[in-house]
Length: 226
Image (tube, rainbow, N blue to C red):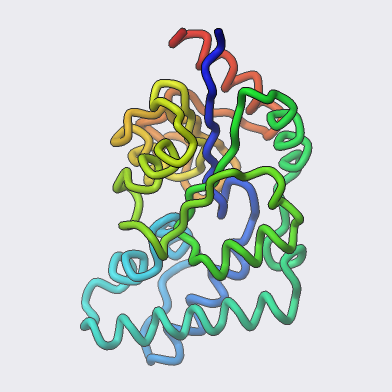
């Protein structure tokens, strides 16, 4: 009998392209605090981490109080941009994502979930804005867990769904996603269209270049572990 299986997706850089909003919000928050704004590439390199960890990585020399102000400023700026532009404009789905989710969800023995560094408010807004709620039976976010690459998000998703780690796959675009998967004993499937270079996804079992490749890649990964 085929076991119940679980595919867990990262969000920013994997399902949606929110880089404009992320860079804009971080820039606004840092400027408000009179801080030097890093390059776009440097800002995108911390996508996937929980926000407080991301700011600490980006601005290691500021104190805890100022870091808290940057975090608050980022949240306010990001929320304002989302309200003004709408989810579809600020965080559009990457090509083929909806079709890929539909394809995977046709299999009654495959469950889908998300594990993201976004806040619960941000995740809820995105899922509602793109009408994705029907796909994800488990939704793990930064409000409830340590930052990636700690495995807490994945171990909780496995517990909630009753799926064994060997029967799960984590799909993501960053090294944090792949390292989190490895820490949880879950296979990692990297995607090349996100915010980390494919060659940085060293813990991934394999890397795909389009959403259309995801279902077949996952099926092949499960075949090799059967």
